Image (tube, rainbow, N blue to C red; front, side, top):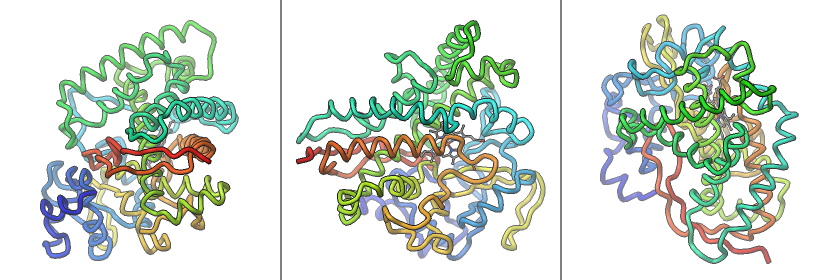
Length: 415
Ligand code: HEM
């Protein structure tokens, strides 16, 4: 981050009136400048109302246990009524997927695709991921500066997604493109014109409809498209629902894992003592992966909409209000996580974080993501003594996807 930029552009969160705090500003995330704002909200106003923002009025929930209370109460806090991000859904281009549904429909559709991440399937996928990761890592230049995001993080997660969908391997970068388009609309504070986004998503729908038509005429397979095409619960989805579920799986499995892979390199470089621990003991990798996911928090928030009035910490949330659960803040909640601002690869209870959410919408791919990151880090450590950070990353301009556009690094081979 550039301290200079954030300090000169953004008001001092310590001295501004509480009611003026608006943590939804995507520029705060682009410049990694949001931390002190959330700290103040956690300390002084953990259930905070922002009455005017680019996304309209909204509540910010910033403490871990308050977010759990909301996630557990899906009857009051709906994912379906207003969607799951701070951005309002477009009524003339309304995709739908089970992350944006309440029970019972949510539960039925989730059940249909959940088999793809069952432990038995993960064991089948692990050697494929290991082999593909090894190949990508072996082709990287040693001693030369390059962009880790493009050459490793994107490439690896895209290959993974192509495997999950049994998507034509040579066209796999299209998956990355559609995922980026899906989340970067100007309407959500990003940079992609809405028209361009829609065009990309319709192309995505067209290609996947072709694959669906192929698979439906073949015997049931183990990929996600075949699973959806052959299940009676998802067989009759209308096109926007199919598109919604595709985007969910593409974004779910893409941006998040990608940004964790970049974040890990960044955090280890910023915490050399932790990097030294890792070199000395690679059994720490599984715990480190959870710590990276906590510390990165690849999705900064999820949103719910109140279906009735509700009182939380004495604040009166009204029916219809937009409620934003800031996972990025919950993961730094000192009441729940010891020394939360430290990156510690051997911390106790490292899976106790909020990055995967909680309750019935808790990330379906969490074990897959962990397995993927663990495997990749095992392969990285076999080959490289040091993945050296060569400059600061460029960050994504979004208060939803928290990640990196670029991350310059140089590799040092293992001696
Ligand atoms: C580090 C990686 C990942 C992170 C941080 C992450 C984060 C999340 C979060 C925050 C939610 C919403 C939770 C809630 O509302 O309580 C979610 C849901 C979901 N994720 Fe992930 N995710 C990751 C990887 C994946 C992968 C690899 C897949 C691929 C299969 C995936 C598929 C999904 C699906 C399908 C849902 C919707 C679940 C539901 O509504 O029932 N995620 N994820």
